[in-house]
Amino acid sequence: MKDLELTNIDKVLLEKSKNISITKKRIKMVILFSIISIFFTAYIYFNDFSPKFITILLLIYILITAYEKVSYGFAVIGYKNLIQKMNSYIEELENPTNTKKG
Image 1 (cartoon, one colour):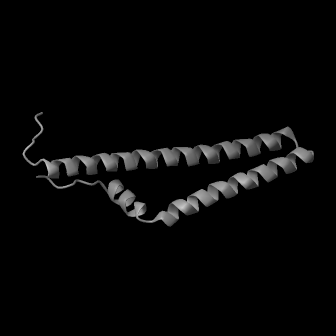
Image 2: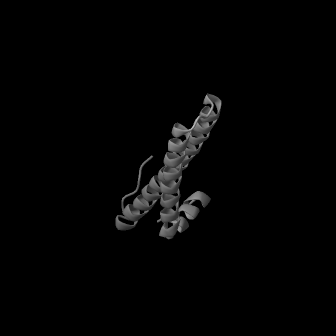
Image 3: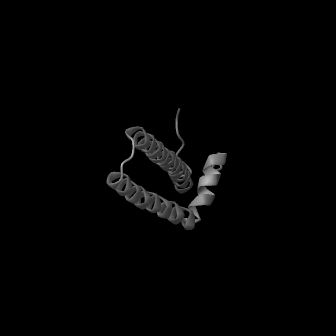
């Protein structure tokens, strides 16, 4: 029987999965950022701002949301990879006589 081989990233994800407050803090920040964006957009709408200024703000918003989505996607991929490794390890523990033929 082989050991569960975890990479450094797997170990970090496993440690972070024990701390739910990190995820709750991230959710709060996304909600806060969305609310601020809504109020700021309304403020811009009711006041005269140049199209360049609005375009710059829009680009900043797009960059921030793209970063959030990409980082979330990488985290999901990491957790799925970790789950698959753990599942394979558990299956191997349950059926030690089965060996994979390559």
